[in-house]
Length: 79
Image (cartoon, rainbow, N blue to C red):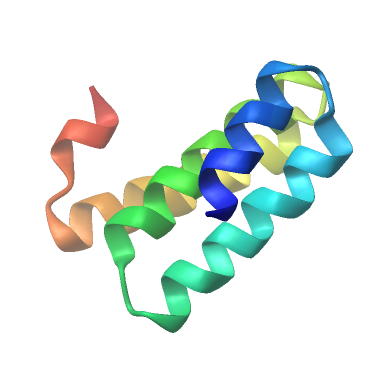
């Protein structure tokens, strides 16, 4: 599963590889129409971007996460 691999890579400092895996996880979630999994992977990718100095990209992603979370009532994601 891409999301688990992405987390592993992220936690082990392999940020570029993790970024690719998060993007694959997001794509897979979209393909199967799973907005919750998409949001979780978007959030993890946004965190990675923030941690690696790409705050502007991270902010755009967090805004998207808030939009999706509100649309599907994923309020637990925002806590």
